[in-house]
Length: 316
Ligand SMILES: NC(=O)c1ccc[n+]([C@@H]2O[C@H](COP(=O)([O-])OP(=O)(O)OC[C@H]3O[C@@H](n4cnc5c(N)ncnc54)[C@H](OP(=O)(O)O)[C@@H]3O)[C@@H](O)[C@H]2O)c1
Image 1 (cartoon, rainbow, N blue to C red):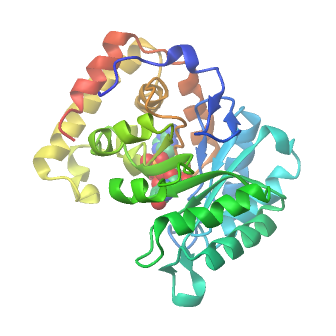
Image 2 (cartoon, helix red, strand yellow):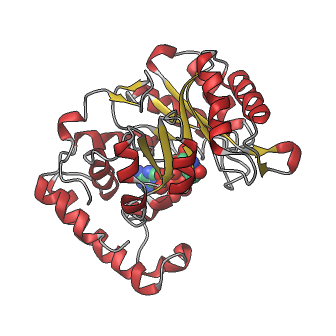
Image 3 (cartoon, helix red, strand yellow):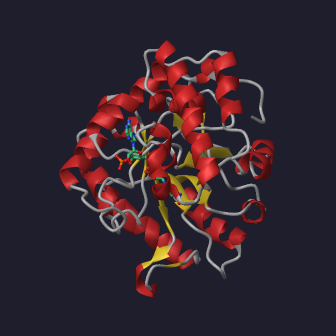
């Protein structure tokens, strides 16, 4: 773990997103790729998606992380429907675009495409502003500062409130932030995928850019529901790495038991207490998963437990 200070004192305090005026009341958000993401996952039902978003908002979660790519706009539409019954000013909407439907989903960061994407997302979300808008993936051609410049125009027009980049390499983040306009970066990070601690965190911290990890539960692996025999479902890990993860999760279970918590809640609590992370956005398939994950806010790990979990997953 790169930064020594844990953040339990901040868990109930507002988090500020980069240099923007967006604040998030607490550090737990919701990932929504299984809300309407029919193009990405089998067996999803819209009714479960509606229930997931409602459960999150009813439980005090305010940041909802979505994207055009989740169901080609369906995730945004479901969220747009649900938020009509809530106070918009308490909700932080984060969405993304880059997949260009007119080019078979190829990434497009051109100013024209990004501006059109924001207008289209506003319609699906049925709102007149987006709190955080990310360029979902970098494209090959558009100079990064030009793409971010277009988002800055949208920010000045009041259509978006904070500028984000996602899946940008460290060099691409620097290029995008040439004029100091990037507020937030979203990237693959979890206890079993920790590269950005070294490659991105120092630059982000020095430049007041917030960080949101995606796949915080490693797509379910870190929930503890998979065992020694399920390694083939996670073929990005060698057999030896997979067994190390399963053994580490057994130790996390012992820590969890001491808090009357689940492994998932304990893992989420670890991120919540890491000051390098602004908001944690675990995804959920069901409202029950959301309900259970929200209880992570009540798990207060001691410094020694925090360090122990950190050590268990060193080397990933
Ligand atoms: N910027 C990007 O390019 C990018 C890429 C990927 C994701 N994202 C965002 O990041 C969010 C988080 O990533 P993710 O959702 O893919 O992965 P994740 O948060 O690592 O894992 C979420 C999955 O774990 C399972 N799960 C969650 N809570 C559980 C519980 N309490 N008990 C048992 N299983 C539980 C559910 O899947 P099952 O029930 O199906 O097992 C859930 O869909 C996404 O929803 C999306 O908003 C962004």
